[in-house]
Length: 220
Image (cartoon, rainbow, N blue to C red):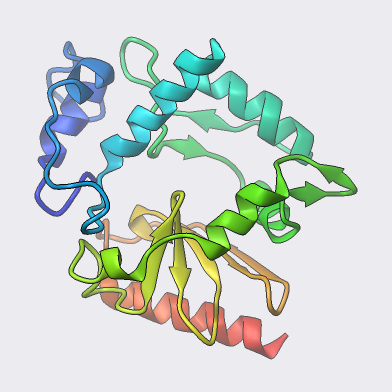
């Protein structure tokens, strides 16, 4: 899912994810054709290529492939149980915005890491300050009038995570076709969910899902 106004077909063709499409452009050359659609910090505008560009920046800064970084600094230290996979374009560029394939158990393991403020099994894997910034940062003002306000009016966004307002104060990573990772620090609850919904985004189902997650967390 690119954005409410983006062209998902071109995006998939460039990365080789569209059957019969022209993937000769590749993900990175496609990213370089995009123009900004508004002023930074004014309105929330979800756009998958922003995350793909972030993955590219991480590779350039570190000098390592995105998949290798995920393995070395996150998955192995977190003690995940199974191999994970990531989709790439015909030139080997990783889809940082989507395409990671991992087991439900390992997805929950990452949720436990976030719940522990970056620590798991006594080891500090990512800085506490990173996790604290997710909970404390972000702007409700920029969310209002943005891409997803109609579907999720009480939320806002920070560092690739969706945040729920009071009284829940949970954070979620949710993806297309019903994937979700829900973390409620107040009740120390982590919920991982893998799905195969017929539509990329279904706000009615998303609302039902969030209500179910909140109810489960409150009952524990």
